[in-house]
Length: 124
Image (tube, rainbow, N blue to C red):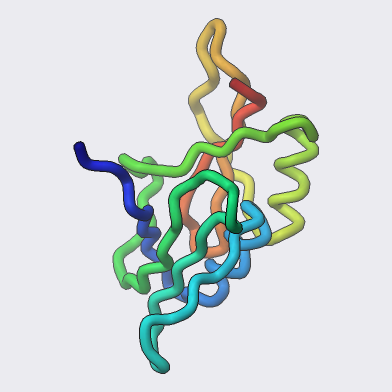
């Protein structure tokens, strides 16, 4: 059976994106494959579950309604505190027209430093 080996994000500036996502998720940078590698991969620290994220330099435009995006859970800090923390790291708020349905956790849509949209939800 297949499994997710890593998630690749299209970014304009890999270093800027990697710094943001390292701070946002507590991930660590994987050693580059070669000296002039512009492909940055970050991964959970040892002993922590999660998929690595690769910063894939791309010239394609950012989608307003991406078909694939990351969903993060706010954790113990709570939704607004986590959103405030991510905004302080460089995330941007998105005026998102859709809301959580009955019985679903509240969420906020943000952009990373490259304009990629992602959601932060209140909890499971």
